Length: 353
Length: 142
Image (tube, rainbow over all chains, first blue to last red; front, side, top):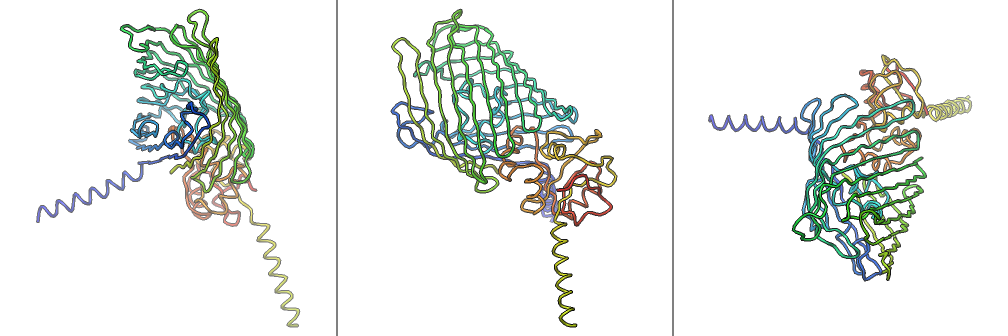
């Protein structure tokens, strides 16, 4: 009898605590599935001339819980098809609201390199099937960082904006693309820091950012690191326009190393989109150029550019169907230069919930 | 006489229809105790897109939406925000997945929103103009 009562009491307790959780636990998710193919035997955007299903497949689940009036905990788990669907925590952080306009976050954060960094994998949030490789392929291995950041929102007159500053560290392994080969590299970014300024006024927006880190890297299986504690800098600028019917973005980036192991890189994209009821048509030109810095290295001068023509169809307020055709040209930039060009075609369904 | 009566009935009926059309207007409202009088479209858009979190007089502004599918919400999205439901969903998914913002709370229909807004001077909502009464203040109509 006593046992039964306890069980009942526990049941009630559980029911009430679940209700309390239901009030301040938020679950959001996103998903993309798609198929793509290219007319080239060489992989372009990770796709060969067969049917490729895993490249654009991604599932994300975000759980956030308000702990008290000023503090909340958020985690975002992401599983990517090109990574064997292994899930990883892209984000896991605690947010402390220091005031109505200032938030401090600590934990694993998305590194805010680009305009689309914060929602890089939420395909539903933009018109492309995937972020443009020529710009967003740069620094891809470092898209998440263990860091602390402060974001302050402000308004003056008709302008609204924010300033975000972060400080953190990254240690990891990645495959360094050299020409068409990949070389296993272990790297650490110490004193990784940056500042991001964004502002909007009416239909116009801008985002400017600066980042730097002290890089130590071991390329291939060398016994000692070839790059020891050298500064790398990254600059980014974007301008946006969106009046509901026509949207446009231009973004440019510059990566500068002070070492002989990596090449400096410049990337840019310009994209326009026109909405016709539930259909959005978009056209993008993007480019990327590796510039060996004469002072530090004589690596090759690679170039890549793409033209993307695509359409997005919104079936309902949370699901989009997208198709894209992309022409890519790649030039290795060596004396007997190896040039590759090809088309890729992709289709994808992307949703948020 | 009978003919005249039915004609006048039709006339009354018609005038009701006409006035209903004329009043199918949406009003953006704040509590009667809110210190702001008229707001312009851009200020309302900035509050409802999370870009700004205060009224022109500096007090905190919290927007409330009607439930998805309500006529007033569709009119508001199209006329004030200038975006389709999908565009707004895409806009908010840029902020939700970064922890940088959450969309206005869905708070029911015209009557529910009017009652909520009446009680809290920090709230701002939109309702069909027909439900407006002395407890709220109209700051914009479309």
